Length: 141
Image 1 (cartoon, one colour):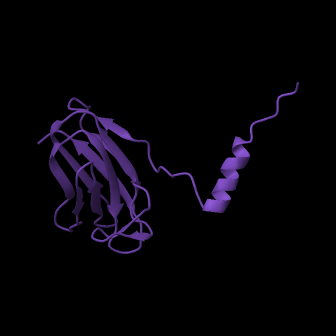
Image 2: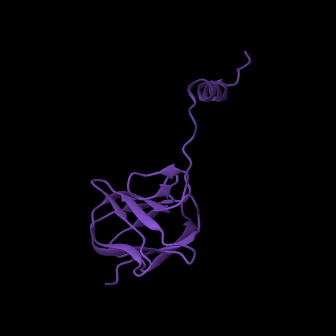
């Protein structure tokens, strides 16, 4: 008896067409950090997006960065910088959401205790534009 190929691909494609389902786009690989991670850590990307957030400017539909904190970190600083703009920093954590607005005179950053969990990082812009950014993670005070 000849075995017939699975219809899984057909069903997935049909569901995508009928229900408008699409795979979630991940812009960057998740970054895992623990209290003894090699500090400082740096990553680069493109800020802004087409979605207007309620308080943090224009952001993409999916986070530019995802940080997985595996254990409590007593002090960690996240900083975003760009030569072309003053990007905003939106952090969606396990319990709270923070927006740090970009400022010409100070770097856009947040520091303090980071509890275990997933943190979605969005680098926003005040206008519907984009620019290159550098994100730094550091445990140095």
